[in-house]
Length: 240
Image 1 (cartoon, rainbow, N blue to C red):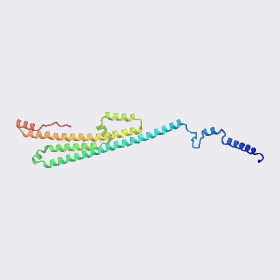
Image 2: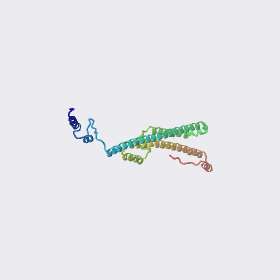
Image 3: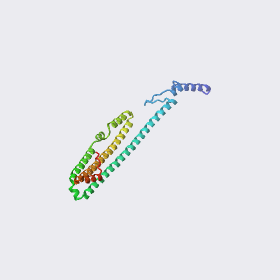
Image 4: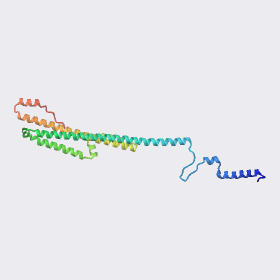
């Protein structure tokens, strides 16, 4: 081999060519760029710039949708919390007003004169009216949410809300809309019940005033005296 140095070089090139063909039977560049299926089904083929841009856009869209849903849930939770706080304040206001009214009634009964007690033939009916209103109030409180909504919320408003729910395709948004509207209805029901109770109490007071005027007129036999009583007391019609 020392006498033939070129012989070793030729043998080396021959062996290297054989090894190259074994490593890259399809050629170096074709083997480098070809698709190789892995055991997990993935591919080692490099992505083009267009494919990378498309994948980045898809990932960005998914991220934006996820963030939008999170923001929607947070906004919905804030709205529901606000409505719940309003309902608590409304309930406390109603309870406070009822306690004040009860206290006023008790004070009036304590200050009632014997003469008024003798003329208290209407007191029984007043107590019965009060008990009736309380019974109606308790009955309304015991009603379920659906019954209360049907009683105090108009059918047109309910149908409009349901159409809006059905038109919304996104499940999360639809549920958020439904929860928010039902909370608004509950608050509206509470306020309407308070308004009706206040109206009934006012009507009872006005009815009592009318009865007092009738009593005063009954004690006056002469027309001028009756006219003076009417002039002093302007009877307002009871509103129910």
